[in-house]
Each structure stands twice: as C-alpha cells, then as structure tokens.
Image (cartoon, rainbow, N blue to C red; front, side, top):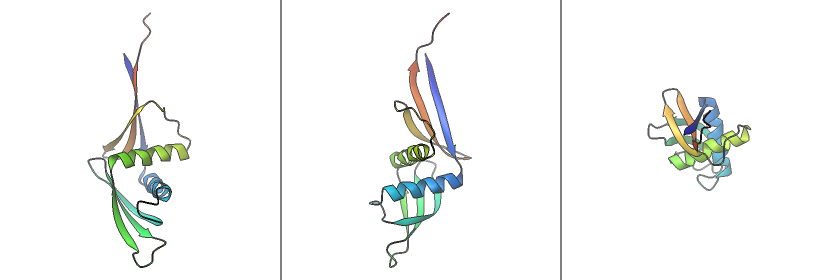
Length: 114
C-alpha cells in the first residue's frame, strides 16, 4: 500500500501575508488588524502580534492561533494562491527549522502488481 505525503512550506513573508488574510476573513477573533509579526511555536501553534486598525484606543495586541486554526490558515493560503490540495487528504501542521508547512497525507493507495 502506497501513501502520498506532501508538504507545502511557507516563507516568513508568505506566512505573514497568510496570517493577515486569515484574520481579515475571521474578523471575529480580533477585529480589523494589520499583522506586524508572527512566531511559529514548536507545538504548531502560531503567535501573532498585530496592530488594530479600527480601534485607536487599543492599538496593539497578541493572539495565539491553535493548531487547527493554523491548518485553516495554511489551507486558505493554498486556495488563494491556486495551489491544489486534495480534499480527502489528512492535513496537519509541520514545524521544521526552516519554518512551517502544511502536510497533506492521502490515504493508502493500492499498488498494481505486475
């Protein structure tokens, strides 16, 4: 049985843009913000520092995105950048020295014997 395993790594710039896009769509998390920095934690969570754009009284803040939210963020990045990902694949966050990646594992595929 063969299994397909794919990893899509994001650069730090791509991660910053992806985080901004995710928070723009999920405005209920922190309101209207501009992301100033991100930090990938070893457990797959993502610490985000932002500046509020709609509330001048509370200009700065931090939020910790959980692994499930980071997976959603990475999937959104792929969709917005026309990177095809299989619907039925199991998706997870992978943290490596060089950054963060979306890992997609597509179930066990039967091999054809000759």
